[in-house]
Image 1 (cartoon, one colour):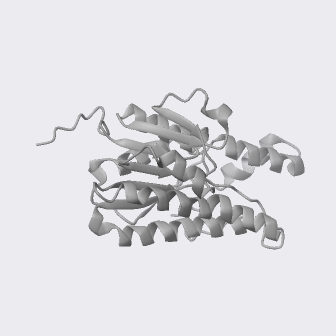
Image 2 (cartoon, one colour; image 1 turned 180 degrees about the vertical axis):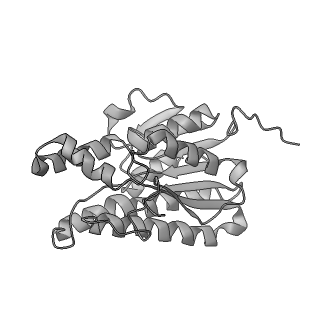
Image 3 (cartoon, helix red, strand yellow; image 1 turned 30 degrees about the vertical axis):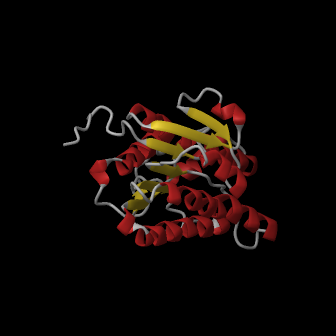
Length: 251
């Protein structure tokens, strides 16, 4: 009988986390490590990885299949994969140039294709848990000025569900976590951009708070906790699902 340490339920498992330099990805990497996993993290920005305390870090462009393959090459076994790469374009379809559209799809959706495609062969023998960070701004709900972002994240959800169906027999679970408005460096950048037209950061922050039925922003720790649960044996009967962590936006 396997005895699970309740304080470290992921002990002995190898976890890979993308976009782990800051925000949601970083919180996830830190939470998985705290729960006992051997965490290997990557990001496009070397500076943000510098003080991340995990087993290893590497600068990787997740849209580059060769770079992703080189990152994963040392790992014959992967038990947990969390793919958190994404890019938020702000604009209607009329405000979204072809270059904006291609960039959105490349960073958010193509990276998921590349990273999941590279990891799955290393998970098929022993099974595992794959968690994609999608968004409630997707096939779940439409938001103003999120045409490209919603389309890309909707694609991530579709890919996650398709993989769940394809690899169920090999004991690999795939679930998509869909955050609402989460306080993170990425959100603060979008607030700063909006503040230029509204005149102040306070006015920009109010725009985001007003769409939150809970009356507050989510935290990266709240998203990380859900991901750690999905990575654990406690979630062994959860597969192919989208979990909205959104403070009531989708009620």
